[in-house]
Length: 331
View (cartoon, rainbow, N blue to C red):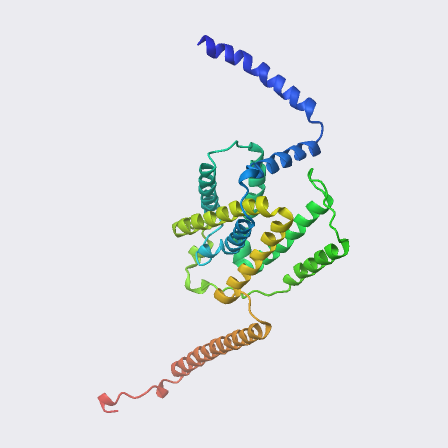
């Protein structure tokens, strides 16, 4: 009890001294971000150079990262994810499992809490993955994400952001030309029309079920696919760190940030049929229009038949003699 009392008395003073020391050493928000980036880079490069893997290991890790980053949403593509919160939770759980395995393989090195900031920022951005895939599709969404990711990474390294020293390329002309081509491609992606989702059969649902807010939003079938998706993302992230260490960021970053879009586009075009050619899309649109016209015409015919039936009933009530005779009574 005395020891606890002493600790309770000393702890506020130690905390005050610690905060005073931190305040004296860190004078601006820019210096804080520089420290975060420096610790993160130190964490990523904390390996023994004497056991540096060969170049082929770096390219293999790059290929694994490209394949898994472009395919990690495939396991959940055919499942209803609802609002995405349950999917997000189990996706992060799968990533955490891979992270624990990697740390166990590396004998649990020193953990830097500042890297949690990057994970929190990524988690916030990944909340929008579910509505993006549900609206414009997996292929087009990852294409746009990859292009803007590459442009952001280029700007960070070229001009120096958050404490990273600027890296001037050998040829500014080729550098800016590549950036311009990527920017034009990013703009063109917005004009790609995805295949619209099938309309819901709302007319077959009771009105109360459509308006009730007490609908169930938990989908147990998404749990295992979400964990698999997170594990694929975690393996891709670990492979990216290995590729950065072996090949350097100037080689691995442009490849891993842009090539997954190609993999996702192949899934989208060849398997899920989310993106179609203009002629095929136009033909499908013509078929939808023709089908809608047939349904409208059928509704009109049903309405006319009902109106005609009512008119015949009115005539029969006004003229009883026009009713059909019952031959069984001898009339």
